[in-house]
Image (cartoon, rainbow, N blue to C red; front, side, top):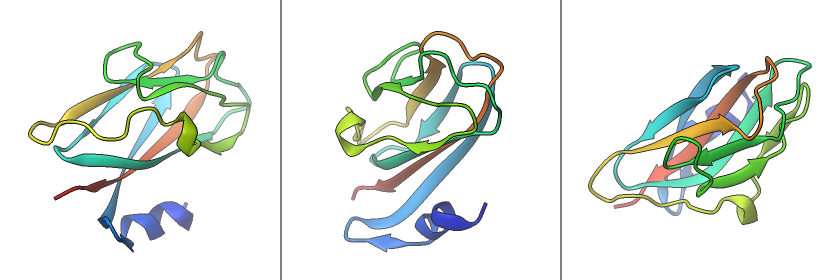
Length: 123
């Protein structure tokens, strides 16, 4: 999928170079490690199946946590993103990498999703 993701990975902003991490999840909790000084600009989710993630997707700094995103609705075959107001935590440690965990709120329901975290590094 060439679209917005590749444009942002190679793009510039007043904050600097955009970067991104992509992750495919098939019915299991997972995680992404962001580098020190990472500032999340956005999170995109694409559901590749006709199965909704029951209860939505929660994202946190601990397994099962909801301090980054409390609940993002991920419907069947959906392409969605986290609204700015729903992105509860964007900036993490300036000295250490930060793992963020992605979990189903209730159940994965055999869904397969692609998640893209778009971020920049603050100097």
